[in-house]
Image 1 (tube, rainbow, N blue to C red):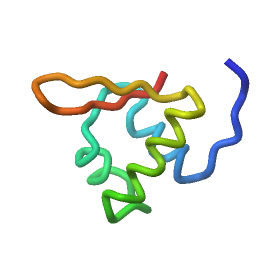
Image 2 (cartoon, helix red, strand yellow):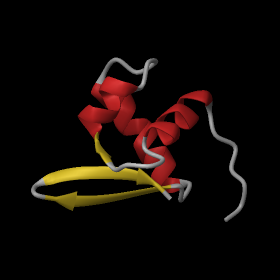
Image 3 (cartoon, rainbow, N blue to C red):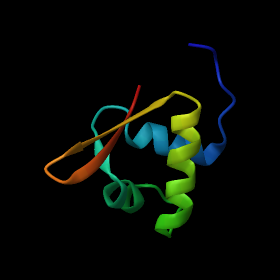
Image 4 (cartoon, one colour):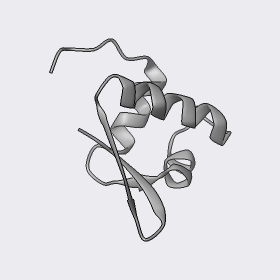
Length: 67
C-alpha cells in the first residue's frame, strides 16, 4: 500500500481502531477532537476512500477497523 498523507484527526481515529474493531459511537467516545457523529462519519469515509479502513456489519452494528 502506498504511504498516504493523513491528517492528525485521521491518525487519531486510525490509532483508536488499530487493534480492535469499534462502532462509530465507540470511536466517538475515544477520540478527543471529535465531539459530534457527523464529522466522524466524514473522517471514516475519507479513511475508507484512502484504503486504510475496513468496515463490516455484525449483529446489526457497523464496525470499523484499520487495515
